[in-house]
Image 1 (cartoon, rainbow, N blue to C red):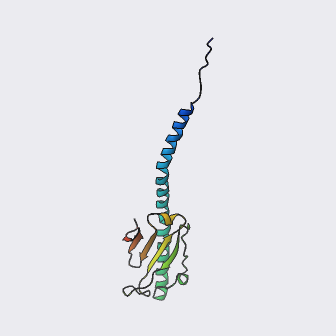
Image 2: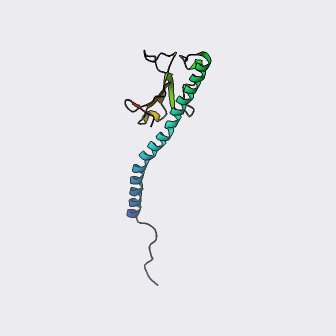
Amino acid sequence: MSRYHKQRGFTLIELMIVVAVVGILAAIAYPSYVDSVRKGRRNDGMNALLDAAQKLEVVRARTGSYQTTLAAANINATSVEGFYTNLNIVAATADCPIVSCYVIEITGQNGQDQDRVTAYRLSSTGLKQRNEGGWTNGWK
């Protein structure tokens, strides 16, 4: 019989190497995961704007003009999933009086305010804009 027993298990060095590798992989993967989740949540804001636009169009079809307040058109100021809020009708301009057109805007919250795209706009002419430090045409 042998006096020495065969060692089983991991050494402390091997265990620390595995922990370091897992830590490095997590540090790389987590920001990508968070960015991916935020991109997925952007649809919540876009859908809220489309729903509000639909309600504004229904009211215009009935009354002949767009409403100046969200309550008059039965529009909720917060998106369905709650990632966007402050849905509002942007102030009228000379080329877009409220009675004949509208621009609606919604702002991110609950983590979406940390996203690259912080707000969205939609006009009655179909113009879609996103705010990435400044307003840019298109939602994507």
